[in-house]
Image 1: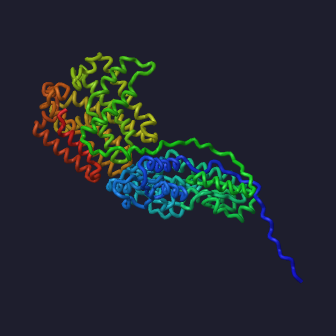
Image 2 (image 1 turned 90 degrees about the horizontal axis):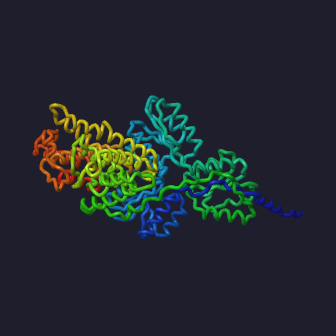
Image 3 (image 1 turned 120 degrees about the vertical axis):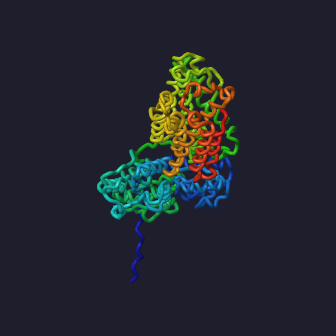
Length: 621
């Protein structure tokens, strides 16, 4: 007897799809993609990109179709080419290799990854061993490891990794977290670190990026209601894989990572009454939309769920570095260009505004604008460029330094100090206006310097701004400019060479050191590089003041724009009085050599700083 053939069960069409909010692209991913698109628009194809700009094949293929060429290492990129570094961050050695090939480079590193880089470098400089919670081999982790010397960071991703660390419990440690790590797992590991070590430092705010946090929280909120969770993302994407793990941990038995609509697991989709849908921070809207379109075609009802509203916006990647001319012109040309830019910045900061006293702002303008070498401002710009900082940020710091420099000259010229009549070929401020106005203009310029540094426009990272403010305060206080001026006014009865150099290191060197330190803070440099730059600055500050002493003895008042011979006339301590002209010149030559030795590891990239050193030794004004 023939039995009737069994009929397949009718598939159950899902009643609803819960759409997690937020999902898809984050601000950092958009910023990185826009950097590549912007470079292509400005410069045309090809634009070379080291590694995947973000972890999504669809994004990479679209950019390839526009003319982007993705490479694994910068040594395969033709010399002089436009090059973008990926959002995941790169080791310092990568940037150095790119510079050595003359590549025109911009770094599209996510600002939140850059924050982690700054943290681990600060902890390394403080003598702490860094424990990095992350996935070994992930590009972000590799880039973070490359910010400090090998062995300074240990990577852990689970409790067993921590147990295997050969560190005594009394070690001074710190921890950082990969920005796409799972929140709950990170919290568990942080607690384990704090339980094992007595001296633990951590970031003031979570390293896990807001986008990762929000997407994990969003899927965690709906996962228990779902029979199936679909995560749209690339297999390369760490935050996509974490979303799958979070969904399962939150109570959904089935969570699947799919690249797009073509990869939908139809059998599971058709048998799940409730589906959750989310997407990684590197997943384009087009891929999410196609999945939604396919689900609708299957009869699904799509329901938007409540979630966090993301209003984070990052400043676009600075593409001006790709067109900014290399420092191939003469030093005079570079100083002239910077003078105009600094004057424009100072005009904007000082100029008339409602409620301001006209006489005060006119006095401030008179002192700060239209004169001076802008040596210190160019020093900030040169150091910042050397270590990957932006020109716009360096310009603002340079303007702040020029405010302090102008203030120091105003006060230096007062009758109670040097009682000078000329400065930069013009009447000194107290002669042009009056003593009270001069004092108040100096005070206002000093305050303006700190106002500029503390403004978010100077740097998006509040910690960097705080470091800039602290460093400048030290440079102008009793351990810096003010202390040096006091030593100059009231020297020992029989000053030694050490007394002289200590005075000059504070009076002139402190602001030059700040210019170098500020430039280093604007970019990224290792602890060893920073130490070399500060050693360079220490010697450069002494060279600059010794040359001032020499010019006071041999200079021309018309060329200098101020009186000469005043040190000898007043019996004041100076390099020429203590060492003689020849001895002072010999000392300047030795210090120039020390400056150049400190810059040796930077190679040809340090030529602008070498030019500034030569200028400091040879200048006639």
